[in-house]
Amino acid sequence: MLMRDEIKAAIEAILFVHSEPVSMEQLIETLDVPLIDLKEILLEMTAEYNDNKRGIQLLRGDDGYTLATKPQLSGVLNRMIQPVKKRLSPATLETLAIIAYRQPVTRLEIENIRGVRSDKIIVNLLDRGLIEEAGHKDAVGKPMLYRTSEEFLRLFGLSSLKELPDLKEA
Image (cartoon, rainbow, N blue to C red; front, side, top):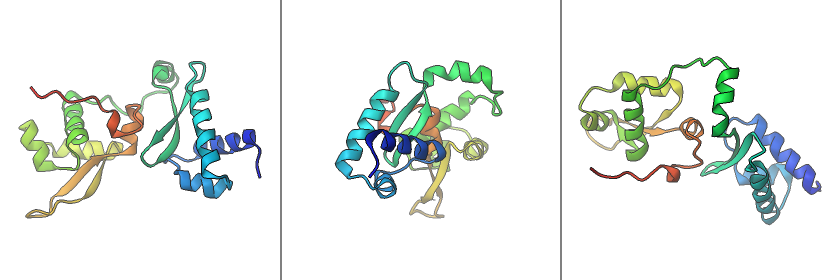
């Protein structure tokens, strides 16, 4: 059996190479560590990474654990890398917010809220990986449903949709 520091190093390596979240079950199976010990180790690692002296953080989402850079370092990272993608336009952000708060939602439902066509924006969001198809609505014509993706959560520094700010109805 691995020692505690070796387990932490192994978890770190696993999370580093996976672009998708890694579930607790996958970690238990891979590392052969009891659930109670793994939970304790992940809590320790979360505290260590959340220390202000670290540049990365350990995020726990609905689908598992992932490593991500800290949002407050985005300025430094932006200077280091040339942005490949343009910023999100106000219309794109509006559409993304509708999807985030109303998901799963159809294109027609989005357009009814916005009052304008949104097909190009939806294609743009799909291309950027910020939203994904979520099946078809059980209605006439079986319209496609859309929801936010894991990339959306990473981009906005969220571990789950529960962290979205509350909506205040006007």
